[in-house]
Length: 175
Image (cartoon, rainbow, N blue to C red; front, top):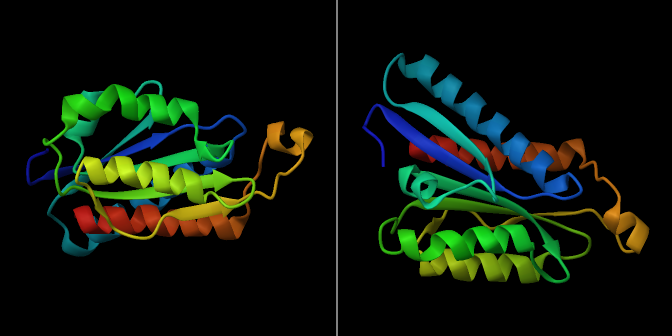
């Protein structure tokens, strides 16, 4: 946790085809915009530090330093992506019972429904005793053929706006 003057938002993401990364970047933009607006309005108060970490590089120390966490990952084969799952596997026990009650949000990119990845991530976050700030945001890319599944993705402006809103909401709760 941080001093009262600085709050830290950790954004942990994994993406192979670009959709979850675009979502994470949009959430970061939303968090930055809200932080700037709130700080300008009150001309003082806490500042927001955003740690933007690929799942493979995120460490337990990053999780412990965070006042709030946003996860962005794809659903692969009806499950959370392997790299995001590995992040949770690596960090789970070192932070267990040390981050209880901290707010989190979840974003999943999926070719069809994303529900299995959401359930898997939410179970992990429940074990960490995190507090969800909103229902999981699922962006459906409708990729259903091997070629479309493997192809680079471009999420829509509307979906990016939803991600920005989620990131901004989490930032506002921290500040």
